[in-house]
Image 1 (cartoon, rainbow, N blue to C red):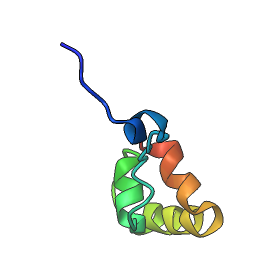
Image 2 (tube, rainbow, N blue to C red; image 1 turned 180 degrees about the horizontal axis):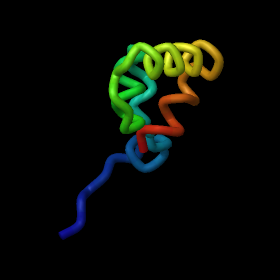
Image 3 (cartoon, one colour; image 1 turned 30 degrees about the vertical axis):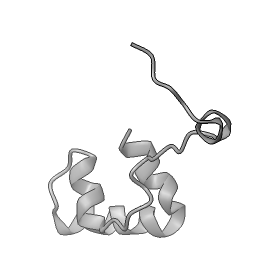
Length: 62
């Protein structure tokens, strides 16, 4: 079954979402990386977020 598309749908580029559009806490990043949210892992994740911003999330969360 095909979908009938309007002209605007055909010409509009796709919108890709990576999950990095929303705010992330260092605790969330540590857990997403498979690490326990220990003070050391949270500090590392905080530094990674400050240094890399959204790229830190995009590397971790597909």
